[in-house]
Image (cartoon, rainbow over all chains, first blue to last red; front, side, top):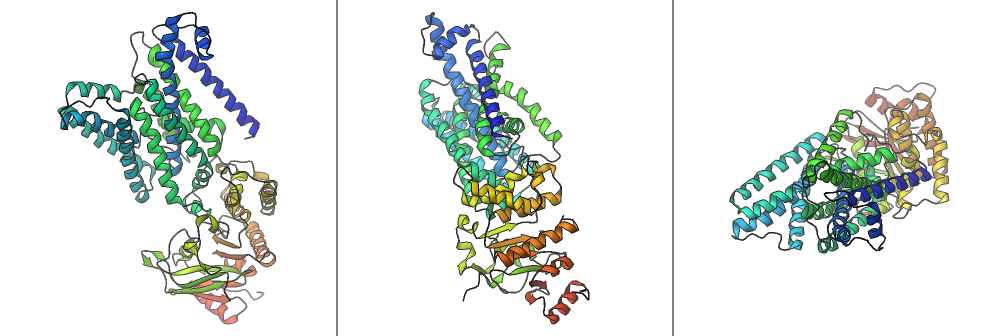
Length: 341
Length: 244
């Protein structure tokens, strides 16, 4: 693919994302005219104070979080697909999101079970750490398994089993925890972009940007890892070290967004495939920014659906991403003769 | 004096050793074919030499330096390696796959110079795959994939080139052509080339030395040695034709 064509596609999907952001900001229980949104985004004067507050305090942070979440999950998925050389890998299916959930469950519910208090959302930093550690633990298990088991489907099944174990541990915790903790946890598992404040964004934003930048600098190595382990080794790649770095980044990216927005599924698998398909490339220098943008498009459109399907309240985003993403994964499996990664 | 490649008291294998201790040497300009029945350890030796797996015992040295102690990045500028396993189906273009051979010399953004591109195009032409350079890898034939992987190793421009069955998948014409190119690289560019092959008739037309895997041993022969010929014929159930 020529450089020109790549640039044109990048510009086009950025425009699509821009339009979707405008739609997302303007739709909801109260419709806000585009003019007001554009005024807000260009730091202009809003004619209506109420619109201004609505956008500034509620909708804008949500869109910002949506974009960060989409980018982080998609790039995590891309990294996992590349390092496992498995087109079906992703943070959700392989149980990484579940691991983060377990971390959060132990923090939110465990506090109520063991200490008799409801830790609630007391400290966001400790929430972030517990999710990150949970993600890293599952990631290490999958890594250990993947060294022994090379078969794609087996690794997938193990991911599903880990998710099963995690959900039963969570059930046990829920059984003993008090009502308030359980409720806040259940709402969290549905995926929620709303619960995030500007203060949280100040924490998430630098972490995600750092993660994405770090991953981008690994592009050359990821390209060399893709053809296979022996190939990578003979091309001067220390595959062990690279794996550990990739796993750290995946845990960081997935853990961070999961801590704040809940386990959001399917975007991590789907977006990298769309990126490969649209850009027709295996080059990570293109795929990393492309997956970020497409992941953001996925989640912003899911978000639009969550508040435009029903006029009463907001649907859980996890339900929408599953409806959009799961058929896509079925398509990958069915189509898969020689899957391109 | 130290040879370019030294194998000293080496035991290779996965868990259990495949052969007795191996002691071999190779110099710049050597063109060596590894010969042996299936499962005797040819690929394992190549994997060990390339640093992909660790030896069970003993060591291999390049310019007197232990192969496993050389940093990965540095090693990729000394040894290039073509494995026999090609289970990579990707939409990567043939050109980009071959261009990976330059990556030991490029920066973190993999920026290639004019010179890099010239080298890539030169070898694409040498291996007669220039016409497929813009095709995605999954769409080309096995023989073309094999030539692309070999081309990638040439592009790496290392003093040592290791290849595991490079003539597999290739048609008769391409096998001859490849070995001709390899012997030219060994002779003119003083490369040390070690490859395994089952295409004995063609290989023996070009190579100077043989490493024979037989009877739990690895032995080195000069092909002009007539006794060695008898030994090879016995081990491989092979007949040299009178014209050789």
